[in-house]
Image 1 (cartoon, chains in turn orange, red):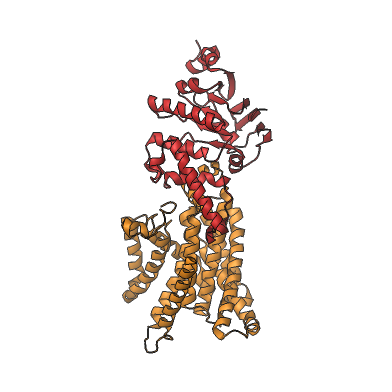
Image 2: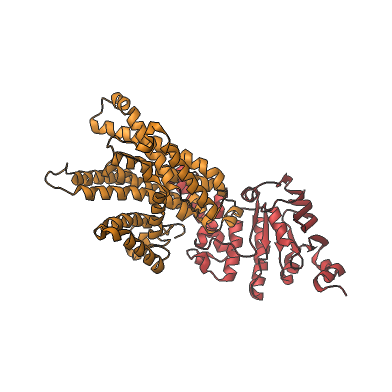
Length: 336
Length: 253
């Protein structure tokens, strides 16, 4: 019962904050739409960073094709809501408008996640036998293939991009899925299965010799991670209402990698921190206009010199607190 | 029937014959020593048995079932566990987690159960944790359970490697130079430990070792390799007197 109480609490909390942000809960309280948008994009980045960390941080496989899976989720879910939106809404006339929009969004996200997971499986099975640099190149190539492939499908707008996507995602949905992502990934890495992932990162030969089916573990982590990236893509599409393949170039993949490196590979709270900091810094440095990216890159260089393991390293935020503050905190996570 | 049987196994790397026509039988519960000068092919034999290398010729079977062409992980799940000459622990994981990883292959663990934290999953995790700690106690590592494996002293790392291999519940344990770098007292303790786990768990042990005191002290049969070929098999006392063995180690007169 406690679980449901917590879940209900989180949903209610998000709903209230969402109401406050959009000004529907208390009229007269206005929060700048710019701030709300930055907050929402940060939430999407949290999903991307935490999911990529499952592969790069915990399993130790260097993947740089995360934007490709995000693109699949974005385009698939947008295509679903655009093409079948009216029919699905029509079948749900008994629900209020919010309910219909929610169901539509969830269907879109589910299909997007499923397709992204399939793509993750397809790229995972042959390429996860590769290691290090080779895997990085294959994932980079695969990400670009997805992008160019979508660019040439006229049904989803091709080079014009896909516009007119209904605005179904908002702060509530984005942070709900961010919370689900964090929950799923943290439970996975703290399980028996998660220990096999960390063992693969530490020493793949020894892991195999201890009876771990390394290929299976790696493929599962790749599939889960891709599915979550697909969800992030779907939310992105339904929040900005317009998508173009230019948003999913390998630079986007690099951005996500920067987030998890800033925060610390192998730390979930680190990924969250990295995602928020990345957005915070790139937005916060806007006043420096053309020097923005110079300053940002400079900060990255300084950070990597001062703290090469990332802000949190392999540890979780809770592990930095004095022991007596850690109410019911789990034992150190794998890789801890 | 023998537990492990290698018949006419050959391993060639290009022009080099690392293992030449090796026939070897290990009976259940036997302590079997494999020795030979440096470069004799002992570790290659381990790598061939565990599927790291695919032998160029010959058959390998465990309890009558062929291991040929199987991947390392499957061979381990079949009941062959090993340690490494150059220690290969999961350095950044804790001591107890190292052992828990090895338990995974005997667990019915579903990814979905882990995400939803089902009751079975919780019980299973609790069981593995309990058994891992019991195993650590046997190896006198229980007080270090929460430490990172990389921070352990050398002798403890060697023992942890054996503990980890034991967690896969093997029928055959391959130990690659377990006494390397140990002082005489640690080596003595190791001998007692190997004998004790053999008696308690009843598995066979195939031991590669340079420390002759350890080999002659615990092995029932000693197998001597030189340049990949067998030059002698027999009880330790015979091996120590065998002129071919003495020649291989000390050079001909």
